[in-house]
Length: 223
Image 1 (tube, one colour):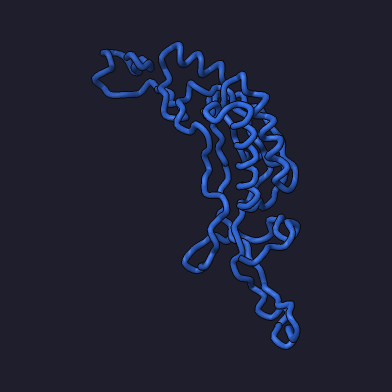
Image 2 (tube, rainbow, N blue to C red):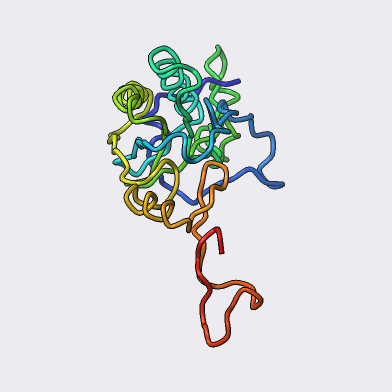
């Protein structure tokens, strides 16, 4: 594989997305192949604490940087929290293809080179196009490992170009419900575990469960 130039050559989001397709062939595989690390099968109630690494710049993040950050975060969490005490998820995927206009640097290259004629490059690697405020990595764990999770993401920050922020989530794990709301729904029996997520039961349902003169059913698991 041809070595890419420094990150400054590929960091800016300039043109339209250029994904792998039947027109764009011969794209090398992205460096990152695993997006969920740790105890990814642990239920939603096991890991209430959640912390995110959020991009504070609009830029391209290469698949190599994502893989390096994943490894750094995983290593730290495995060492200090234990390999079965967390779930790390990489939240962006490198779909955008980077190109390089290869130049020859050997003797007599000036005879063969065409300069900027036909300068549309060949595929070189892949990257993720990231917006300001977009989550790059998320870690969920128990509350007693919250400091370890934040330190692991701080170390992962060094693998990325640009600025990132570590933001402690108010939500319960990877769900979309606030921790207080989640506890309340759980006590009322209105929430059902759905893998790493949770489903809130609404007050609509089958007509057989509806009593005469009642528009809505009781939204609890027991109903």
